[in-house]
Length: 286
Image 1 (tube, one colour):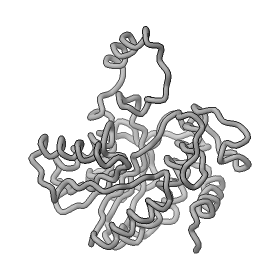
Image 2 (cartoon, one colour; image 1 turned 60 degrees about the vertical axis):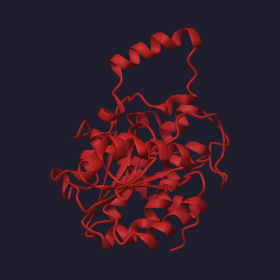
Image 3 (cartoon, one colour; image 1 turned 30 degrees about the horizontal axis):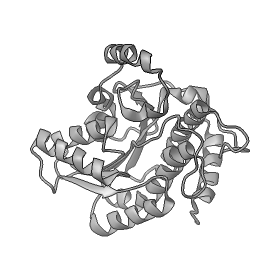
Image 4 (cartoon, one colour; image 1 turned 135 degrees about the vertical axis):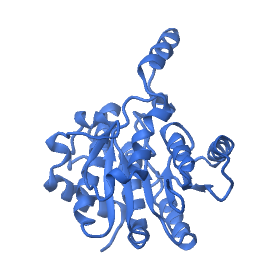
């Protein structure tokens, strides 16, 4: 049970994020739903309250746009001011295979939201997590990381952009971030682990074009083969709450079990270099 625990879930207004928030509330945890779209987030929060019997103190909505470093900083300032403790941070939000666009700060959208926004968010909340130890950071990646690589000469995809490759790169960055974060958190009482949820029926694929005539067949097949959001959220909830992973660090999980990663996802030299460059990109001065 998670009674007395405060958990932040990014992108909690739909899909895996919403299902994760509901699962935490069912375990008696208190959830802060960190979402870009306030209206959708309030609707999702109301759904969770009705489903679980929770009240407005147990399910809270706060505005967070990971495509804006200003928004990330503002969100964190509010959390630090208002929350005496933070026990779990679940970096769940993501954009998938969108056309080439840039964030408010000029970063390629998928790299900017999926990696850099969460990188800054985690950095700014780190002291609060440490003060609340034992605490946990959960990073949602994807098995599609296998198709990505980190090209330090073109992290912003200005020389070349392929939307599928850019997504895979951002998910590889999530794993490398977890790798370096684990090294830096040693002895702090804060653990960091990643997960791959599998193929889940969510609106993440809204930018993927499926011909109109093929949609009924695709929907039928997806119901049979893809996980429901609730099934997709199981590993996130497990890493946030289970005593089985007390003290477990730097692993990646799938279906609530440790997953063997490719070497490129645990390359300490690349992870350290990506961290240093990410600090410069988001304006962290140490």
